[in-house]
Structures are given as structure tokens and as C-alpha cells.
Length: 415
Image 1 (tube, rainbow, N blue to C red):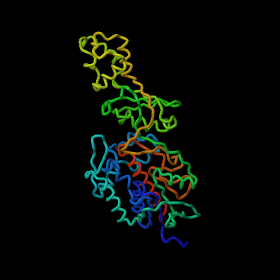
Image 2 (image 1 turned 60 degrees about the vertical axis):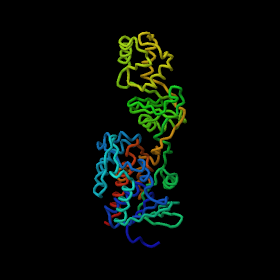
Image 3 (image 1 turned 90 degrees about the horizontal axis):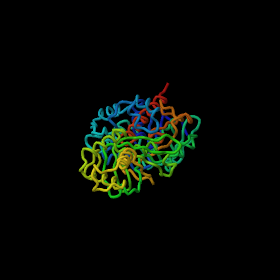
Image 4 (image 1 turned 180 degrees about the vertical axis):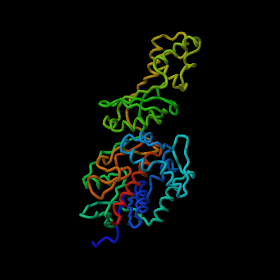
């Protein structure tokens, strides 16, 4: 092949990270030839369906030290990444191109149009303006490194490039390409899922929610995982933010246990055991003539309170004044540490996230360059970073894409 007329980069993967990297590369080095290869028939497929078709672009959590706490894997390394391109920069980037974002009460940020197509149109318009070549239905079969360039092979074409960015998400095809170049892959396992629990205390109560509980997950061989937040009873078991957080931090341990583990729920996380015991004793005195089933001294949904009493063999017609001390002790213990056996992994339909990918130790996080293969860069979901739901996974994609695109463009500038 003849000499390449100008510096060129091939980006594998037309998701958020790949497209954003392409735009940043052209912004830093307009002379760069940027070709983006996407296996699907359209780029930005995940952007289209995310947030129920509204696209949860980023989060309103601008404080980097707080922001990284939403990432079970990659916290330490992401501090530097988000210091350079954080949610504030994401908002500014889109708003400078005419896309206004709004913040919902839970901190998620969406386009004011509530339509993910607004985000897609903005990114693709920028790509047209910068003359980024986006080629769809272009599945990369092989990527080979030669002395001074790469050869990227798709079923239809061969592309030469001085640098390659792998932004192929958590796809097996992408993993195969980077392992052939010497990288390891931490095997991907599901993160963000609900728990399947068959328990008579939950049966028939689907839809009942608790605004604030503390959940503790026992994973043998490691410290218990503790998270707080709202809880929801489902037809198959338990869900809600507290469960999704436990599943994210426990992703590997739960996978190794075949999703069978012990869960403890504290239904009164703001009250210690002694104070709760005191409350129950005071209720026994002050509400002596009231039936227990009709008077709950702590904040619990009525139907769950009834079920809890039933599970403790406390007769529904029993009045508070007649409840034995032993029953009160068991009630306070259960409210503070209610055990459930997890029997499997449920689904979380809104988002599919995996934990795993290229180890961060094999990447220079200042540039997203491979430490194994010179000229190769990695960004987005292919790296071992994952997050809770709420715009955090997209923020990782924008930030690592932006850093990689800028670094590639700088490295290929003429001396």
C-alpha cells in the first residue's frame, strides 16, 4: 500500500464513546482523517433507547469525589478522568450546540425535548460538520499491528490507520480483537439486576415500596456489602435502588455464587436497636387496647406490617398491651435485620450493564492509550468501568471518549 496522504485514525464502535472521540479528535486536529466503523445499521443505538427513549445524558452530580462513588469499578482511576471532563463539561458541550438539558428531582439529566433523537441529531450533525466518515454494517473481523500502522479488516474493506480506538462496548467481538493484540479481559458479568426471592412474606405484595431501607449482602470471603435506598417488592422478589446498588457492588461475588446469597434488610435504618425496642415498649403502654395489626409504631406499609406479624406468629387480633416481651424482642430484631434468601438473578429492563472488560492497569487513563499495544486506545464500556443507573455510564463514555479523541489527535499532529 502507498504512503497514507494524511494522519488517519479508525474508531471501532459507533456508540457514545466512539462518536464523541471522533468529534474531539477532529476538533483538536482538523487535518486528521477519522473513519468510524459501526457493526449495526445505525450508530448510537444505545443512546436511542436509553432512559425510555429520552436519553439520560449525564448526572447533575458535579462534585468529582461524590461522582466516583456511583462507580463500583474504576473509582480511583475515574477521579482524574472526570476532573478533566465531568458532567459540567458534558452539559456545556451539548448546550453550546443548542441542546438544552434539564435536571429531574433524582439528579438525572435529559434533553428538554425528552427525546433521545435530539442527542443523536446533535452528535451526527457535528460529525457531518467535521467530515467524520461513519460507515455502518462494518463489523471488524481482524485488527493487525504493523511497524508504523494498523490494518483493520471488515468483510467489505481494509483500512489503514496510524492509530485505532476500540470503543466497541461489552461485545465479544471487540474483546477478541483486543486480546489478539495482547490485552487481557476481565470476564464480563451482569451488574444492575433485581433479586429473585421466593418468600411467603413477599407473596402477593408486588408493588409495595419502602422509601428508605438499609440492605446488607453477605458474600462469603469478602466484607458484607451495605447500601441504602428505596426498596420495592416485585412479583419475583425484590427490586428498587437499594437492590440495584447491592447487585452492582456484589456483581462478581454473586456471579461466583450462582446468584444464591443471604440478604438482610433493616426496615428502620435511622433508629438503633435500643431506641426501636424502647419505641415498642412505649407503644405497649400507650396503645395497650389497640390491636397490633391496626397500629404500627414505625413507618411500614400496612399490608407488609400485617404479613410481618403473621410470620412471627403474632395473632392479628392481639392488643398491644397483651403482647409478650419475647414477641416484642423478635419483632424489633426482625425490623432491624430481616433475612431473605436470594435464589437467583432477576432482570432490570431499563438498562443492561456488565462489569468487566480491559483491566484499567493496562490503560494509561491520562490518554486512554493501551500500555500493551502502541497506537491503540480504548474508551467506553470495553474498559472495566461500570456504574449505577442515572446517567453515570454515559458520563464515562463521554469522558473517556473525549480524552481518547484528544490524545489521538495530539499524537498524530505533524511535528
